[in-house]
Image 1 (cartoon, rainbow, N blue to C red):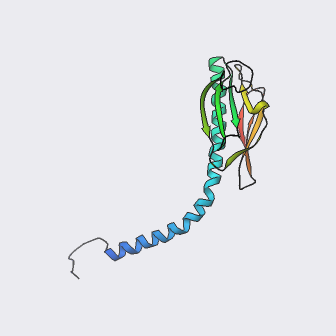
Image 2: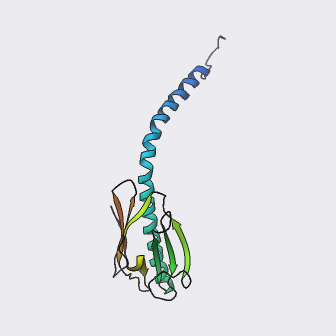
Image 3: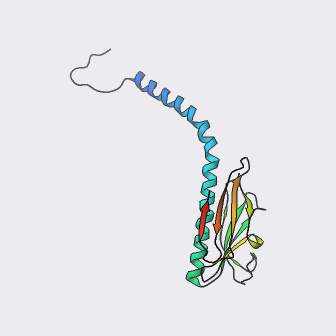
Length: 161
């Protein structure tokens, strides 16, 4: 090899290859753990999304003096929830009469385990109150659940683990 003079610095090709090989081995060991962890992360994300959209529905109802709702559709694959303005005020989701603001699908393995709202619809009224109830979300292959609870008198939304 060549003799370097002074303060020559750097790495040889062999050192770089060894470091890359070690990083590859560590990555290969980490991937299975990450894949097992991912569905739980998706469940928590879906639960936070349901809670956030519920808070948005409440804020819009108070700000606009109108009635808003969230329809929890577990017949759709994957399950989805729909934010809508309850134009006719019947506290039900009617695709032809109500104004759909947006819909969002859940992660493919997330489902609504139980929806404890009349007609599967959480309603927020202009005074901030709601019809009250909760929705439980879970994964198909696991038994644990997360719950989004909406209080009837105040419309307060909270996530229960």
